[in-house]
Image 1 (cartoon, rainbow, N blue to C red):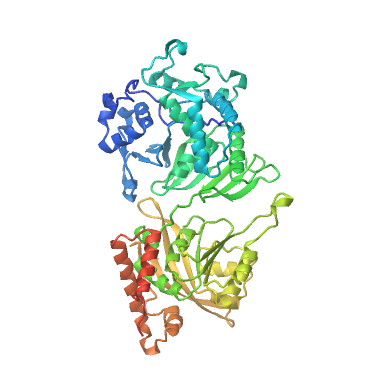
Image 2 (cartoon, rainbow, N blue to C red; image 1 turned 30 degrees about the vertical axis):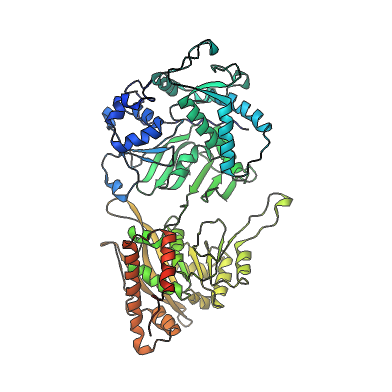
Length: 620
């Protein structure tokens, strides 16, 4: 079992204890700092005393007491002099602190191990843990089972000394240390020296009972248990970042701090980072092994999926990454955002959603196109709730990100070529897409089209299989150019099998924040072989001045009038009535939103129920 890697915390302020909390953690009301906290903060502190210890070293005379938020809203970004704390999981809190000298503010994870350096205890605990694990009869399979076993064994290895407990001659001296002494230790910790401590010095400064158990304080026990679970079962120092529901991207560019992209506060710099290349290399090697994709100098690049479904890219070594190994994690939500969430953030509006609802229900093929991190996959996932609930859906991805609410869902993931003979052969998205055509799907969803699989996707469209996918292009013209050029090489006469192109982008608003907007929704009408030009109609256009989506194609939709109305048998003289259906469905979505059916699964079930009741029948 590898030793826990110590990574320094680079606080933006000098920790200075406001009061001596010795004895106060057992009786919180005796702390003057605790009595100053708002009621919701007191509740957090009662459950997580390490939060009070952090607040105690925060220079409150300089920054003031942080505001506490159980949940964040977009209004929080309007705060001046940011100084707030919110929970990220059951035992971790995040402190967002203003940096007046930089556009990026500070992101400070507050973990149970934050002020309790147990690095000196860890080697002895780990050596004893190895012995106990070797003698273990059970074979825990899931992470929950392994966590339970680890907690039990840690309880057998240590003895938790109570507040004020005097163990006398049994201990050979007092073991307790005041918070002030612990803070001094925290400030003067030489992480490099501790990491190089030899196994022969494992017991240096450690107090044991006669049965060999290591004596620790309650706070040290919490820190030990947290660190062991975090580093042996979880993703190490990345745990608070991965636990934070407001984080979108996590980036380590090399030696230096870890940066995050926050849903509310945009770009932030973490106080956690790497100070030297060897520690960073060790960390990325362990991380690659944890996800069962070993990384070496021969194979220095890894694209993979973390246990929680997040996408990770790792580049190893200074030969190709001059600042040191780097990694980027694109987080996925446990529950996808629904189209009503997109409406709340003004990515689209009710009319846009209603138009897409009708088009997808009647089998139109669609691409969501835009630059990296423009929210393409999020939007594609959100509108899958509009696909008929009885349909069979096949998704094809190289990294699994899509979540489809339908019960009849076949999820297929491409497989990279194995590094050894027993790993099997490579299975590409091209192979999976060809196989999907034999599975009689009602819709095929491709995570991203960027190569030869594009030709198969368009062949599928020609044979009547609606395809939905994401694509990298900033306009309809650029999308067509990429489709018709290498390596996709779609014949120009086949491009109009694609019905709808959504152009999406991350744009800057006057308030200073970055938001995601569907810039336009376009219908591809056809190809003129004489002019070699493509005709398309813009149905919706985003107005950056008013931040509104304008239905520019109202009354002139080729798909609604010439395709969907024809499928429904609507006579030509009454085809304009199809636009009333768009208005009706926009009102349905608005009513569902007001009724609280906002979440992904809730919205899908309500749409299915509405359809079963016949409320979506279009009268001719």
